[in-house]
Length: 460
Image (cartoon, rainbow, N blue to C red; front, side, top):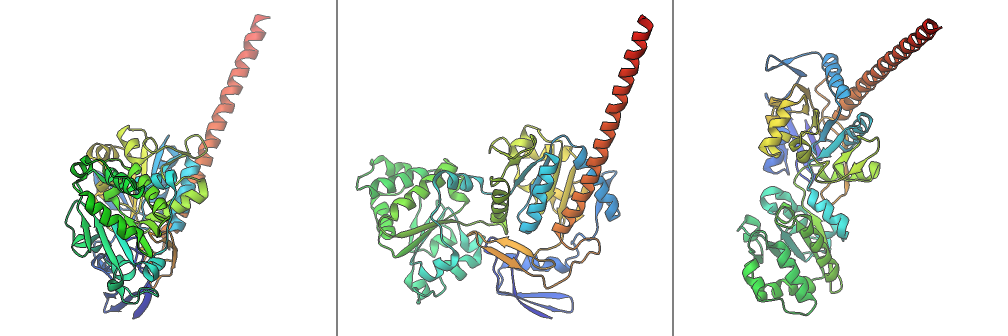
């Protein structure tokens, strides 16, 4: 069987030209990178989670679907402040249901996100462009704090550097590539100019570029601070001022260095200033599949991109208080539901230790460190392969995907379907709990009133 135009569910590029051939239960994929091949091989992998699991005596054992949903719903409904962590390896439709569950429970909902980038965008705004515009128009590509040749191999081959566009018919020969990175990465070696700055000096370098842009000379100490000479800064600035269409692609190297979201803010301000001379845009290289999707869905539903807290019945947003690491470090949650993400591998040891102490529910396709400490494991459906839905590409363009295989489970058709079934169970649990509390309150009131009547009769 041969299938084409499949959307790859691995990284933020969301490549939509994948070709898949199935022969004798073996998967062969074309137009796909090494990361994508490993994901497609999960379809027939013996490691694939194929049934729900519940922890008995320290070991995960198979149980019935309805039974495990009842237990999971009971854990979440009875928790005082649950955490719902929604990963990027699932569709926007599943994100929407997960957020609705969080709102109903009064939980905190968070995701895998480059929060500093989102916060910097909120502070300064963003002059963006789609990857198609970069391909057709871009004659200058700046990669700042990112190494796409290794982290997102097809970004440069499909959009950024090598493809022939409408106004860049010679491909690589019509483009100038600049890489700003403390390390000599593969992307830096393939560039025309490698600006090798000192670690944690991104903010100072951008400030110096702004100073030069305003026709002033920065203090000579900037060369020692950044490790970049002023003539190299001037060359870099001249390239950006004299291009026809330039784009700056930033990664976690910029947002995770000293300065955090302020680095993103000043970078976006630099782009605004550069647009007085040429057309320059800025974008984010997002490594995970649908990491941009959660920001989009959460923003249009509740107005905030991540770290939403519903404990007061309405959404609140305060990074540093309502984000996952901070909640786990302060031990502010008493249960957790991790959806399509290996959370344990992405948080500090003290947070991981507390996550192992509280009741933990996990939804995933293959075993990972998070599933190993979970009390309940729900098997996941692979989006774009076994169910339909929507991804947001890293340039915030929505990509609709259709499956070429059916769900391997009879009890669920997609991760969205799993969350909807769980949501119904949670509603039933909450209604029963409210009815029980209401009945108990009536009994207490009746007992109190009878006691008052008997006392008044005795007094007469």
